[in-house]
Image (cartoon, rainbow, N blue to C red; front, top):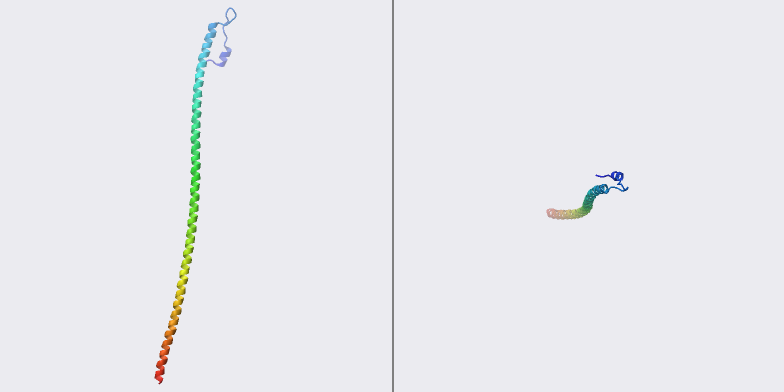
Length: 149
């Protein structure tokens, strides 16, 4: 294959009239044309390969961008789910605490009512004892009065 240096250093035989030998020039041009065609085809093929590779790179970059966006979306969605779960857990905890406080207050009220009823029953029992004791004392007084008579 000809190099640029070969072309530059090429010398043609001179004819008797001082010009170049036509056959020598034409042979050289044929050789230059063949090499040029070969290089042109190779260049064209390489350009096609480069274009194909650039398209492949674009395709894979678009896939990469899609994957990155998918990952970002998944991370964002996971974060949203986590935040929602934490909020829900807080609501459930607050509701449970409020319900337990309410239930505790209800139980305290029931205990106070039961204690008040117990105290009322004790008072009634005390009054009953006093009445029975008074009745028995009155009966004893009547019996003792009858003995004295």
